[in-house]
Image (cartoon, rainbow, N blue to C red; front, side, top):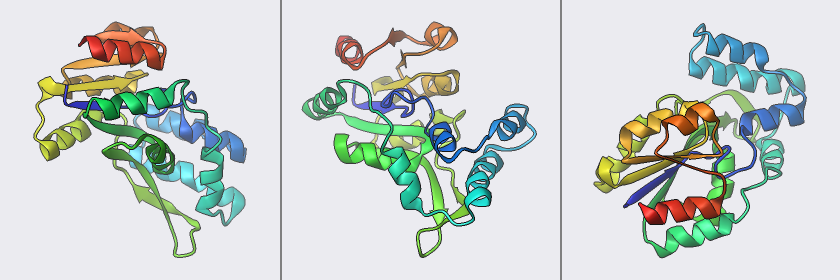
Length: 210
């Protein structure tokens, strides 16, 4: 394998959603926004902006450092440093492809040193205060498109790619990968995966076996 692609929330972290983690910390409720998105009444970009708007409306001005400090409280998976060592020793291209918050991906990247990180960026003004917009680098239901772009950058074939996710929204990763591994996935995700694992150690063993 030349390329290994990781979802972030629920795979590299114990927290299943970096967005929900921040919502809870700021005491806002995005359930109505989620239902609108889930029912197809709004696009993912609209959903993204409505979620940020919850923070801005409640706190008027909120600096990105407040959000970053909240994200730093998210626990990474046990043995995460073993994964970083494994990736480095095997000289593979490693990437994060996540619908989560880019600032968290950046925090993790500083520790594990990925080659590429794709997650969703929240914009700020010149003073670091959050504004109601951002850059959608990853549509959660179209992660295969991002993986293909990485494959083109490094001239890597689908047959040389492994992807790892934890939920149904990660299933599209299969379309651009030789093997898809479910990490702590639900029954549906496990049933659609080539392998299912529940720990970093199991994940490393499975990758070694492919």
